[in-house]
Length: 195
Image (cartoon, rainbow, N blue to C red; front, side):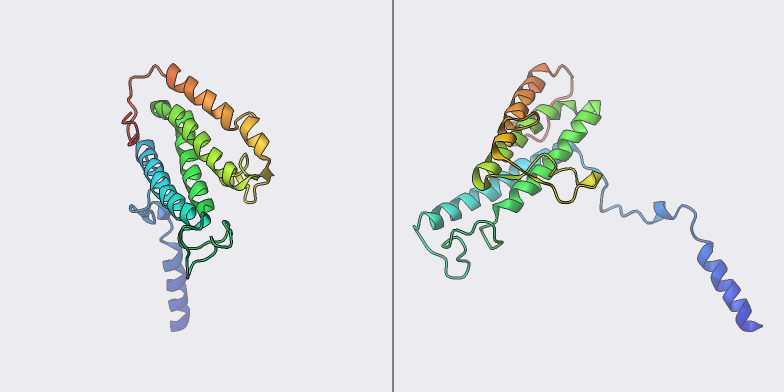
């Protein structure tokens, strides 16, 4: 009888704490969304800093101005293998993913519309570097992971440049968005041109 009471008490205890559990289990240190000004600052800085290092190391190693004893994949012209200073693939896609978040926020929230033009131009700039370095890459489906696209198909370099929502189209749309912006909110987070 005593064991039955313990079991009933234990089951009752487990099922009594489910109201508003999602609110209690929210981590305040892991935000669900980020202001576009902070993401823009991060994308510009990270892409510039990381790719300047990649350009320095890759230029020296591929040009045979120096050699690497430990991390010698550059000496073998293997750009797709991860190593210290030799994996620009992740740098491109990490920054393109964060830039896509800025672009989605700019298109879905009127207060962030000022970010659409710069985000489109940054997307075109980074995509041009990506496809110029690697050729055919995942592009049009690459940032649709939220909707279930986990393995995006590879797109041809020609399509990436010339198709709708490709590089040239994004440049044109970005310039149009900047010139056509009539809102009163100024661009924040532009550490390259200061708005």
